[in-house]
Structure formats: C-alpha cells, structure tokens
Image (cartoon, rainbow, N blue to C red; front, top):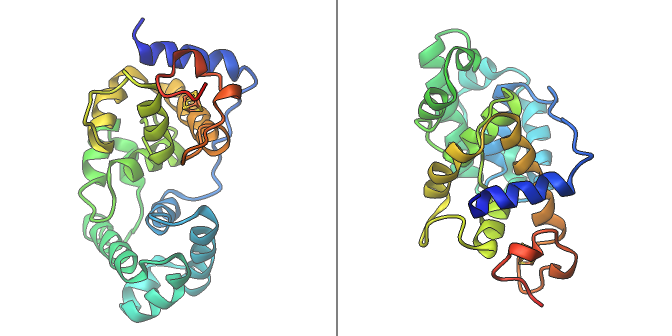
Length: 221
Ligand code: SF4
C-alpha cells in the first residue's frame, strides 16, 4: 500500500458517516460561471457576485446579445479581478455558442468520457484543470479529482505522496489515476473539510486532533 492509499484508508475510517451531498443546486453552466468568479477570492464574495450576475443576466443569450463588458464588470465587481473574470465569462460563453450554435449549454459533456471532457473544458480560457475537474465532479457526478489549495497543502504536508517540485496540474495528473469514481468525491470533500478546519493554512495547523497525524511528515508535535 503506498502512502496515498494509506491516507485514503484513514479518510474512510474517520469519515464513516459520509454521505453524498452533490445536488443540482446549480446548473452546469451556472457552476462554470461560479467557478470563474470564485478564482482568487472567498466563497462568500463569489456567491454574492454570482447572485448579482444572475439578477442582471437571467439568460445567457441576453448577455451575449448585449455584448457590453462594462456592464458585466460592474455586476461582478464585488469578487475582484472583475475585468479578467468578465473576459473569461464572455470568452467561455462565446466558445460554447460557437460549438452549440443557438444552445449555450454544457449538455455535450454527457457524450464525453472524463478525459475527453477535461480536454475540452481546459481549452476554455480561464478554466484550468482544477475548475474543469470541479465542474465535472459536482455538476456531472464524474470521478474527477480536483486538487485545490487545501488539498495541495495537506498532501504536501503529509509528504511522500506526490513527486517533489510538483504543481497543481502535475499533482492532478499523478493522483487522478489512483482515485476514481465515488471515492474521488469522498476523498476530495474530506480533505477540503480537513483543510478548512484542521490543517489550516499558516503556521498553526491543529495537528493534535488531525486523523492524518500518524502519517504526516510536517505535523507539529
Ligand atoms: S498532522 Fe498537522 S500538518 Fe499534518 S495533515 Fe494533519 S494538521 Fe496538517
């Protein structure tokens, strides 16, 4: 058993009451926009920006027809980097419009394998491997394994799981084959929770109450 498998075993042992919580709170395309808005900001601010966005643009075709980037920037201003994010949003919608003609949606994803879908999604400017994996995991219930800053920090601290000098993209390529299907979702969610509450960023992770303590190289005694 390698160290990543041991980490998964500990996650399963310590999260026995885990249950599936993915629901259709957001349509796939709404989630794509939310993932763009969520880059480099908090969930709270990106949620507020998304709410404003939906009030101003209840219909995606309306946004493309209006083609007014200044109005779009204003509607998402609260989450920061609004000019860049507005460009990403328009670019993504135009990309989908070109590929679906009058139907701007992500229905075509249903016909693709996880790997094919990832390849298509990361062609959209502003959508990296993490956002694409999240979109597939949450909106399409696929077995992709998104590695965000929480997961990356924990896996690095635990040590000897990913190659040295890795980054998010390389970490995804290395770990995705080792965790698939429902397990990918459970491991992702458990590590996000651990990263938010226990293995927090900064100098004071709560190692004494962490269930990964026994295998962690960077634990604080
Ligand atoms: S033992 Fe400490 S550093 Fe290691 S994963 Fe747990 S909280 Fe993070």
